[in-house]
Image (cartoon, helix red, strand yellow):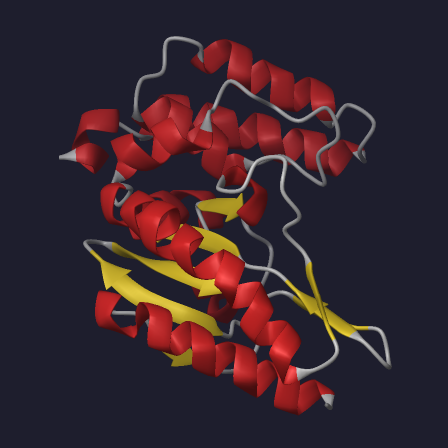
Length: 212
């Protein structure tokens, strides 16, 4: 089984599982299964790993809230055409399968079928209900567990900081300062950008005007 064939089979099986919930496949740089939600979108993606003779895949889930990303992308140096690709929250499969293997090794089509024997009830009973219930600023903020700031971060999570501000989280100052501490070893321009972003929230964004 070749790379393209494996991807096609995985997508076909997953499509049958989630199409009735409004998810539609989109190929390209931001490929995956998308559905619209009020003022945003949700994504079910399929990370795929090619090791030559064998492959493996997993699932990943993302939620974009346009109102939040419009704020964070004011501080996004990427060209505007890429601003539409940013996500507010990303959730890994292990959130829904704690303590279980979430990367499925495959060699044959039967391996894919076996993987979905495990994944099908997880998608139907845990993931879809979660996505159905997590579609606005307050529910997404709750799902993000904003007070948990990873010790190692690839960069400041502006969406998490914005969500804490917009929901008037009582620990906003702690959350913001913790992210600033986490990137204290980053180049000065990154640190300054985050400082300016936090200041922008304080001076220009009224939480209730975004949520309501």
